Image 1 (cartoon, chains in turn green, cyan):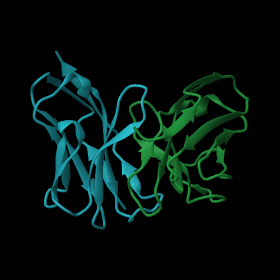
Image 2: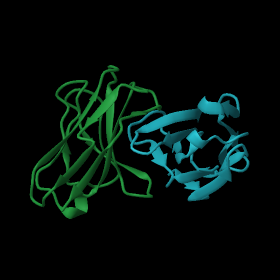
Image 3: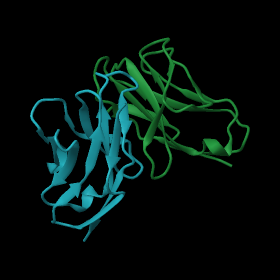
Image 4: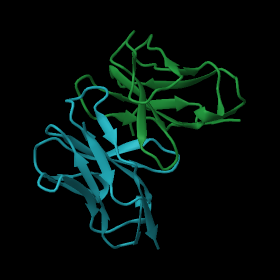
Length: 112
Length: 115
């Protein structure tokens, strides 16, 4: 399995709370990604990064924000969680110039 | 623009029988194509990928897929299903040469293995 980790794996939280989903990889990959996946649906790219201090928005608009201060770390933050944010969030990484992405186990978020 | 259509949302087969998961794509350029598998509570794992070399691609766990340009298809097959194959399978296309926004995922096919 790829060396990419996500915490927490499951999170149940109330509306209005600030949350941060953690993603770390130990493969030295420059590129990292966040996807959102609703049950039975395809993955949608919400954020990506080419490397340190690089962050870009993906195809699907999201109220979340990301940061990339270190190569191995790409956290995603929601300032004020809402029930519409309930979903699974998957983190991935890849080598620069490579198409193959390696995925973490995902975080299942439930906002009440 | 690129797109992926997985023709079956659910496929059910008996253990020991062949598996066929169907995928059609559209792409403006020469695409790269992937199949990923997602077991319950796990991340996506790469099964195999096609990148303009041999059209028949062999992957892990006995899976293979054939790229057919004339049919714009990239179906996934396995000769004999095993209980451990039960999972969600995603067909993925990329035509941007590795650009960060270049992957397009299908909606997934849920493979059920009957004992």
